[in-house]
Amino acid sequence: MNHWSLPLADAGPQHGLGAVIGAIGRSDFACAGLQGLNAAGLKAASWSVYQVWRERLPVLHLSSSVGVADATQSCFRAYHDGLYRIDRSFDTVAPGHAAVLRMHADEAPNTAHREAIYRRHRVLERLSVVQRGDDGSLFAVNLYHHEHQGRFSEGECAGFASLAPLLLAAVQRHLALLPQPAAGPREALRARCPALTERELDVCERLLRGWSYDGIAADMGLSVATVKTYRARAFERLGMHFKSELFAAFVPAH
Image (cartoon, rainbow, N blue to C red):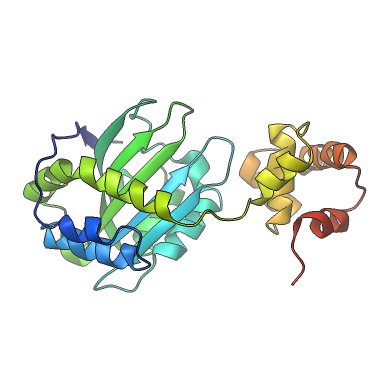
């Protein structure tokens, strides 16, 4: 792959970023943020902010599009359903560091990623500011040019690099101000039984999200028999025998 990275530029006063900062904490942050970035000269058709961990499913924090049908949710579903595990496009970012990256559709890390996200939705190029946590987790703010827009110009790339530190801070500040969601299935499982291993949590979390055993096996790179072994061990620790008991304990009744 031939994507390149830029060091984060020093951030001075930046025209167009005021709309992003002004929308912090508002329900329309995703839309207003993209408009603000475009006012700064980037002309992106869509953007997304997501977080990826080694041992957890990725989370899409926000996304929006302008001038094109909004396919950001569809793209992330494909990413969430397994592509994130084989995404090597951010591997150059070391733990504890941040960087600006650029990637053309042709440079997507694998054929499945390229076809399911970029080709299917006519996305041509991505500019990202990413931050790698000390634990290996990745926080990414991505802007996309679609095929009708052509590639990002060198001026747009340089402008994005200068905006990146403040943009990263603004997005993270916005997310910090949002109401904290209820504990997800993994956190609830861990709270109920701290003895559960990471693999056992992986399997139970996916069961609670409605995944089949075949889907879990494919996502985790295991055999179905191994997945069921982890399930059995987890159920023993939890004092359960059937999947229905797992749902009854961890899925709220409607």
